Length: 180
Image (cartoon, rainbow, N blue to C red):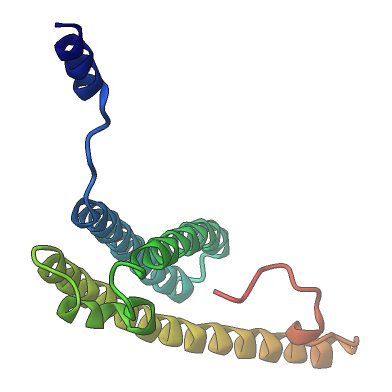
């Protein structure tokens, strides 16, 4: 009878077995969550870029500074999410060899559903938002350059009108981070 009692105690305290499949599924769930976060952050950056364009058109410098700060914070969050995705990829690669050599959009052929289809949809959303963000950033860059040319011209008129030496806007100390 003592043997039965000790056997029951040993089996009752044994740790549950975690399979490689369960580990992969947990990592794929985490990956989908991180890519979803990246897509949301990119969409938020897109909304801020649209807001930036509106503020550039009405020449609202104070609001532009606020938007630039928000963009910087979102960009930092996006970098952190990307780092998390890369870490999950690194942990997942031993279970799915070669995964780290593929683009995220190519993973759907290597991983099982429902993760493959969810990831494919998120990649499409992420790519679409990224493409729109690039285009909007290019448009905003053109607006910023036009604004700088106007300021240069205005300073040149002031210098010729008042006979004083006026520095170009490009020679003035940089007051705003223009690397948006």
